[in-house]
Length: 307
Image 1 (spheres, one colour):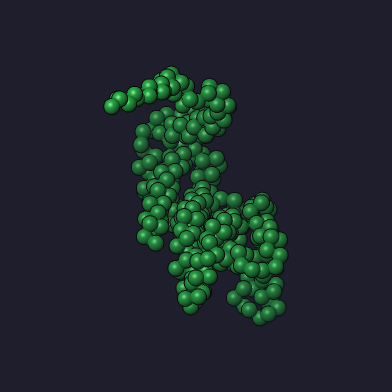
Image 2: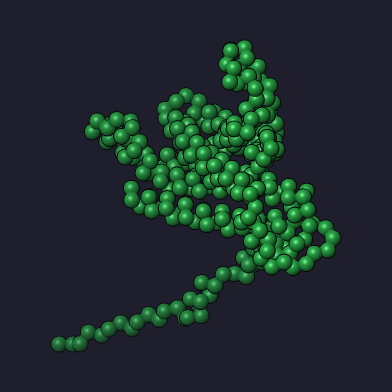
């Protein structure tokens, strides 16, 4: 009985070839360098410069000296800082909840079987491409002139004066403008999520007798959990940085009732001679936004996993 002859093993590629296949061509790094340089010049360098001046008493002009962490310590004893933080967080929370409820409802309607679906999607996206300052001045005119005139004609006495003139209602006008403008982007995100849901799931649920609300809570919302997380995190982050809407509607008034953190930093730092102090406020607020976004993202991602 002859012993079978084993075929010689085929030599594998040399180690140098494997390393060559995994090596990224140098041209790719060269293509990234211009963008990296621009990012460093317009983002990283100003950020580090701001952190440096937050440790000084620099007024934006003239001489300055180091004060250490005194600016940061003074922030916690400033009542105006607390007022700005309180308004900003109230505005951001209310606007985030409102914009996501409205955007999700509109997205579900646009995802249904309706005529001129593409045209309606384009119409609802228009607010996202308009200048918020110009739109803000339009809303200012509506709140200050059109709405009171219509309310007076209809006999609605509570709206005969502009809601922007009262410290108790001015923030509502800012919320209305911000939600109207921000809903467009959120609608697009929700529409992208709704189109990933297989239609067979709804057909099977209909055969089982599930109501539209049951289909929403059991199929639609769990399946778009990741898109809901994206919208919630981005919405809250953007609303915490509100600035243009307030400038065009109330300029922080009446008084300081609608003064946001961003507006306070701008006024104090560039107009009030508090450059170093408000830079410390900006640095602190940067870390506050990062912490809130991180916590929010972790909580919402855990809820995604529980569905």
